[in-house]
Structures are given as C-alpha cells and as structure tokens.
Amino acid sequence: MSRLAKKPVPVPAQVQVSQTEDSFTVTGPLGAQTRALPRAIVLTKEEGGLRVSGKDESPETKMLLGTTVAHLKNMIAGSVTPFSKKLIIEGIGFKAEVKGSEVIMALGFSHPVKLAIPAGLKIMAEKGALTISGSDREAVGQFAARIRAQKKPEPYKGKGIRYDTEVIRRKQGKKTV
Image (cartoon, rainbow, N blue to C red; front, side, top):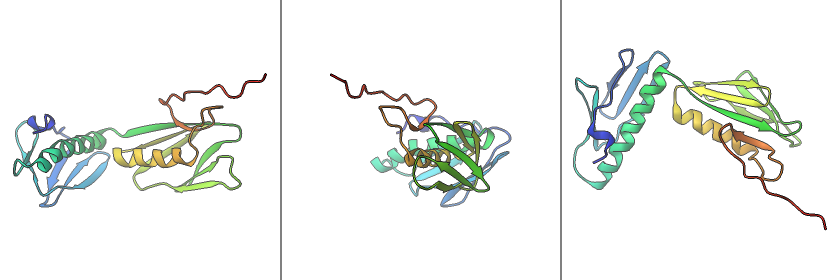
C-alpha cells in the first residue's frame, strides 16, 4: 500500500470535493477540476479529510493509490493557490508576446511561432520571460513544456527557451591553433 494513502488527505474549508461513480470533482475559489476515478479506487469522507483506499490488494491497485492521492492533493492545492512556471527566453531577436488567446514567438525562424493558450491558463509576457499560471498543475507543466520544445536551449551560446530554475551546462566550442 502507498504511504501517501495511509493518512487522510486534508481538505480546506473553502474547497468542496464531490464524487460520482467514475470521477471526482474539486471545487474551490479558483475554479473546478474533474478527474476520472480508477475503478479499483474508493474515496470516502472522514473527519480528517478524504481517505483513498483500494477495493482489493492487487499490484495495480497499490500503484494507483499513490497516484490518485497525488492527483487529489494537486487539485486541492490548485483550487486554492495557482501553480506557475516561468520560462526565460534568451537570444538576439528572440521574443514572445500574448495577443488574445495566442502566444506569438519570434525564435529565429523565417516565420513567427503561434501557440493557442489552453482554457484555464493565464500567460504574462515580460521582457525576456513568460510566466504561465493556472489551477491545473498538469496543464501548466504541459503547456510550459510545449513552449520550451519550440526552441530548446543549446549548450554553446545558451540561446533558446529554458525554465528559470534550469541550469544549462555550457560547452567550450572550437579551439584555435
């Protein structure tokens, strides 16, 4: 059994968790999120919060316990405070701007790169940086990864799009004789 599933998941006062037979919904001040509930998992309300347990002791059920608890905790945390990722854009002429529901980036290609912003996410464009925030942790991380994949940082000059906490190991380059 997962160590995460041994304790009940605490639910703040401003958050409500509702459950149908095949999904659960977390509703808070920043919005509502719904996720499918695996068939082998059972959610029960207790005094200390929500208890996640399995219907049987199969290995698949044991694996799903920790995953379901982690998803539930992320949904509860995201409904109270938004998750955010910051991307740094480095390079001469590299820039990004938000127009309507699109991010338009100039990344050294012959054409601008346009990406549609998913519903529920906010994007702030500052000089040389993009900040992505939203209540769904998975959507924030996935969209940040899609933006980074447009121009990954290269090791010689450090040009490209990187996370603000990411460290690029620089290579020396050619030596002249």
